[in-house]
Image (cartoon, rainbow, N blue to C red; front, side, top):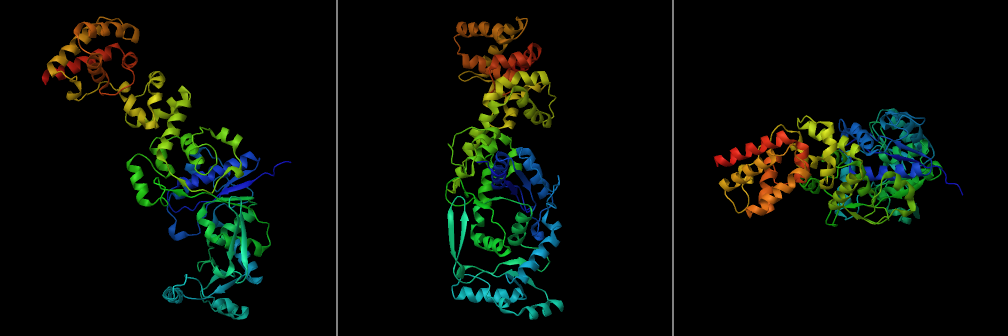
Length: 493
C-alpha cells in the first residue's frame, strides 16, 4: 500500500532564542515529510505581538538552515499556501471566527479584565480551578451584535461542550479522554483583532493542508479544545503527535532558565544559536536530539540520510527524556571524526581566522589528521592547533622547567636538543626522533623530561598533538627559533 505524502509544519513563535525542542520537532517534521515524499513548512506564529523579540524570526530561519533542515514553504521562500506569517493572515481568521459564531460554536465576550480577575479570585477562595464563568455565553446574539455596534470592546470565546466527554486521539498515547465539565471556554480572538494560538494554529493547519501535527507535550492540556475546534468546523482531523518532554540532566523536572545558565558555564546549551557558537556541529546536535524521543538505541550514530532510512512516527516515544550533555559531546566528537579532511578543514578555519591568525590552507590540511581525534567541539581546534599559524609562541617559563629538574638543567637539555636538531637538514619524525631518543638514553633522563621541554618550547603549551609530527609541520627554522627563545627564557630564570 502506498504511503500518502505528509505535509508537516514547524510553527515557532518569535519570542526568544530557538530552543532545542524546536530543533527536534523540526527534525521529526522534516524526516516525516521527506520519507513520504511530502512537504515540510515553516510558519511563524507571531500573533502574541507583545512578546515578539526583534531578530527572533531570523534566528529561527538561520537555525533551521544551519541544521540543514530546508523547508519547502515559508515566509522567506513563499509557497502556494501563504502568507506564512500569522500577522499577515488576519482576514482569514476573521472569516473563520464568523463561521464559528454564526454556527453557535463561539460567542463574543464583553467581560472586562477587572471582572475576570474578580471572578478568578473568588474561584480561588472556593479552591476551584480558575475558569471563565460563562456570563457572556448566555447573551442573546442580537444583544451581542448591538453591543459590538456601539463600539464596546470584546473578545471571542469558544463554546466548549459542557456535558459528556471529549475523546482526542494522540498517535503516541492513544485516546485521551476528558470530562467536558472540566473544560474552559478559551479565548479565540483578542481585543486587538488578532487570534490566539488556539484559533490561528488550527485554522492555518487546515488551510495549509497539514496532515500531521507534531508538537510538544505542553499542548496536551488544550488538546481537547483544539480537537473540538476542528470538529466544530467539520474538518478532517490531522494526525496528532505530542512529543516527549525534555527533562533537566538530573531527570527531575523540566529544564529551567537557571539550568540553561548553568549549562552554558560548562560549554553546553539548550539553544541552537549557542550550540553553533560553542563549536557543536549540526550533525552532532541532530543525532543527539533525535534520540531523545525516538525509540532506537541511544548510542546509534546517524546522519540525516541514515535517519531517513529508519524513521517512522510509530518509533517515536512519549516517555520523558533527560537531557544528557555528555551524549552531545559523544555524538559531536564522533561526527567530527567522520568528516572528510577537506570538510573538517573548512569548518574549523573560521575559528582560526576569528583569532586573527593567517591560515595557510596547505598547513591546515596537514594538521587535520593530528588533531581530529582530540576534537570534541570545532572550537577545540584553537587549543590544539593555533601554534601552527603563529610566527612565534610565548611559553610560560614554569612550563619549560621539566619535572624533577631546575631551570638551569632544563636550559641545558634545550641547548642539547637544539644542537641535535640544528644538525639535521630537515625536521621530521624519521630524522629527529632517533637521535633525540639516543640522547635520552645516554643522559639518563626520561623521555617525558626531554620531550616535554621540546613540546612547550615549540608549541607554547604542555598539551599538543604528536610532537615530532607537529614539529615537521611547524618547520625547521621556526622550530629552532622557538627552541632558542625557550633557552633564553630558562637562562633568565
